Image 1 (spheres, one colour):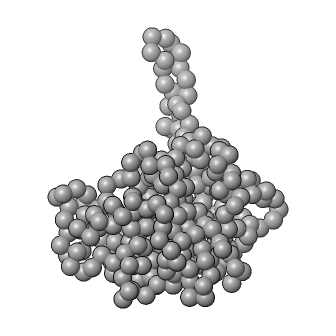
Image 2 (tube, helix red, strand yellow):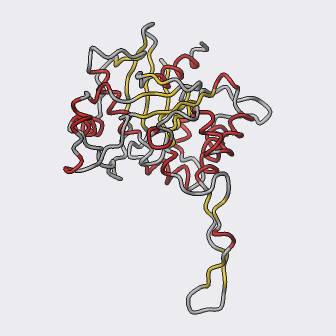
Image 3 (cartoon, rainbow, N blue to C red):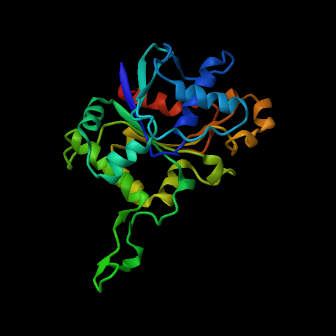
Length: 287
């Protein structure tokens, strides 16, 4: 059995993606490359999100203290099994432990070394910082209150560089040698595609290169070409509003379990939201 990690900061779209996957698995008329092989043991957060979507509302953000790891047990048509894991489901733990602290905790090292691949979800519409640079407020200094002492503004990695650093930490945990091409399957999923390219002007690799040039070049120069893929994802196909005022009747009438699409590298759209995970399963088996 293969095991892959679903990674991403809070608001990247992981909860909605999981809820839409459940909706498809529960609808016998919807065809997908993967299906549930067993009932997930702990997926209350996904069920709550699914209920919100069925009412035409965008699910509220996962509570910060939701630190459980959710697992989706899946299988393909050839009965090859794969578990997709959400470590620290809320997503803030990913940012706090991996991004802000800039080191991997013992638990993250164990997850990384035990995984057969990873799905990194990035929401381009959330990122406003300049790509591939350290955000230093243009070198502006800050004066300590009550003194004449000036200090450089705090240096914070921009999102583009943060993702590179996260991947480097994970690769080092796996014993990566710099001279070798990485053979650890990685699917980069650019979520909420309908917010950034509704007209299909760019392919996912082009979007990655445009919005995240540093990450794009890192992947191109580090990974084996066959072991990294970039997808676009619109889990709901339209922007929904949260709360009781967010009821979208058109979304409900169209059947939430049939909404959403994945964009492949050549720009084609598929209603099968399992494609990135199915690709990871194929690569884990050397297909």
